[in-house]
Length: 153
Image 1 (cartoon, one colour):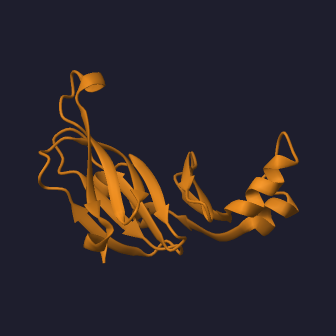
Image 2: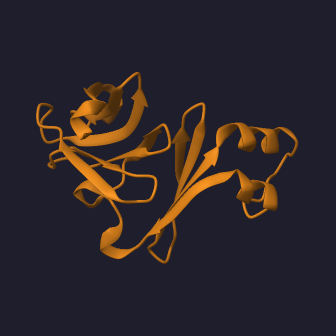
């Protein structure tokens, strides 16, 4: 499970034991109102379902996992979802998919070496990510980089 979003929309990414991945995008204000009034919220409740503005499920080869892995996700507005992947030895990659799950763009991050990419965050027109430059000393060797979101267009 992973989640993120922005002030307008919140998303959850849930990968099941059966191998499917479901992305659900919620109206953040509606979700917050629901959470403010309840200690626990069932996501299949009428109010939670009504707060969901987009949802799609990917399976098999349609699951977008750059380099065959999932290392994090974030979203701009509700139409651009960014997901990163790559382990030590891979060229780090970030893919952009739409709010319907359609694959749009894959960007290779080529100026940081072939190191593990961890996470992805969007802010002010940039897509930020962390690179682990030393796989043995992960604690002290993480560096934050960014690319402008326009490279995904």
